[in-house]
Image 1 (spheres, rainbow, N blue to C red):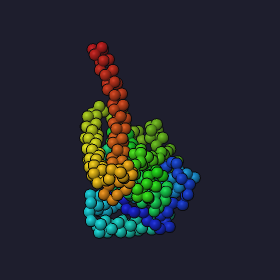
Image 2 (cartoon, rainbow, N blue to C red; image 1 turned 30 degrees about the horizontal axis):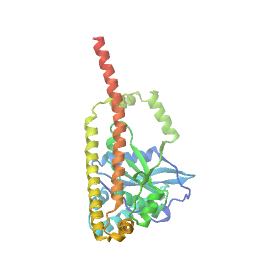
Image 3 (cartoon, rainbow, N blue to C red; image 1 turned 45 degrees about the vertical axis):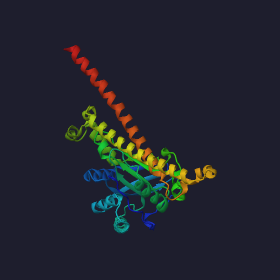
Image 4 (cartoon, one colour; image 1 turned 120 degrees about the vertical axis):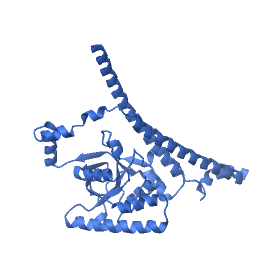
Length: 334
């Protein structure tokens, strides 16, 4: 599922004031819980929302987040599948009005109402699409170069590890998108991942420390202890789904490659032999040339799937070796 974020508002209340380029992101626990709650309650629908906060001394602090209404998310999901432009404009206007009204209400209760980016849920790490790139490009060009997108994966998080990533477009990708040129760029240089740190107020940290040590709320510790869930060896469905998606993206890449080959053959046939070397560099500038960015985004997504499978397989082997050692001990003792 793929959704498109609404374009950022160009009001004074929604502009990031910092001119210094950020190098890290800090998100408050309450804002993160709102993102997690929204994404989990909306499954299997993929959803989006807005991030609010401040950028100070190269650090982007996310202090609040609010979701887009479900009706709007469904409209944007339909738009991602290729609806008419009139419907897209109407959904954009409604989304703009919703965000504007939400900003006004937050300002009345003295909550940070500076828009610093947006968030989106993803399914097993799938995010590298053209609509996702266009949404982030509009945020970084129309709102601020420091605007970011936070991605949360509820499915991978259910396996025991919090999967939360923060991205922005690289300077090289921004220049390429602004120029409109159909040229090559390293797929690994399209998105830049920014480290994310989770912070909590002092009282919240004290409460978490007391619960963890068992000083207060012994019953809570007993009911929320999920340590043994990490030893689950049922990795087949998880890896099978990754392999299924990986094969699907590889097929898409092969389709894009066929488009390039077909265009190159036709361009070679039409070109004069004496101008063949000259046209070799200029033929990709024509309007009917396939967009290279599509294949580059697919390559980036394939790389992401391979990294996830490698990371998950490493943990799976550790569990298998542990289970094998315990099984040998049981045999020797019996």
